[in-house]
Length: 131
Image 1 (cartoon, rainbow, N blue to C red):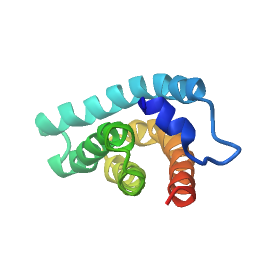
Image 2 (cartoon, one colour; image 1 turned 135 degrees about the vertical axis):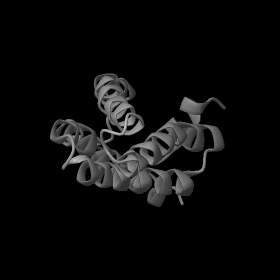
Image 3 (cartoon, rainbow, N blue to C red; image 1 turned 45 degrees about the horizontal axis):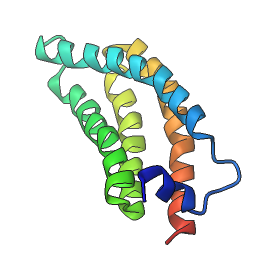
């Protein structure tokens, strides 16, 4: 069974967005993430902001990129739920950490935070319904 066939067999809430909608949202968010995260990493390497500020961004990046292999490769819903909670938590941590140094980066994370908040509720709902 393919990844999408497997996903389509899962019990999901009625408000689950269509796959094309999810893809469109990430297509909009990823450029913002690349620019803002890239800025933080470059400024941390240059010593313009403390390297500790880049830590939650790095953890977030790893957790974000790990979600799809966990969810669709391993098909491990509880681990995917834990992973998305890390993604959500590190967005908040990143925003707080970067605020004193680059407020625009913190503000740029707001759409990402909103979407991941929705995605977290969706993932926790799917995990619970299919446990």
